[in-house]
Length: 119
Image (cartoon, rainbow, N blue to C red; front, side):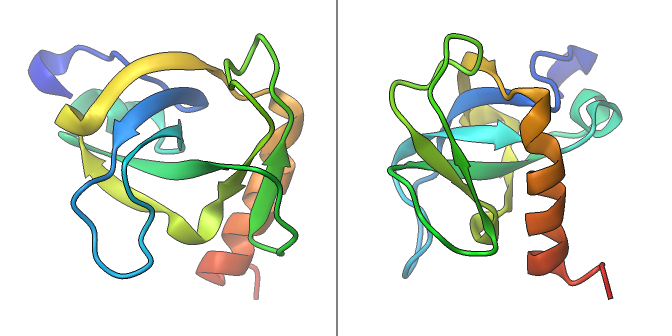
């Protein structure tokens, strides 16, 4: 984080500029979930995010999220855990909201599927 200032935390949903990309990588400026822990967010110039895309999708690596005032999403969307990536702090924009706590177990389960740690 620049100058040691923690400006985003795990669980925040922020606008993130994902360009430039290749192939089927998620493009454009999109809402993303910050999943890196806050110690990493405090000391690193990178953070780990997961894009949140419009609509609903049925896949074991996806978490569908209802739009609420708490998470700040404009419509129902899905967290595409298969698109997890590290981004430079300069790509992080304004905060929309915070993901509700009841989504975290589904996010962990999807991460286990994508990363294969639950063997």
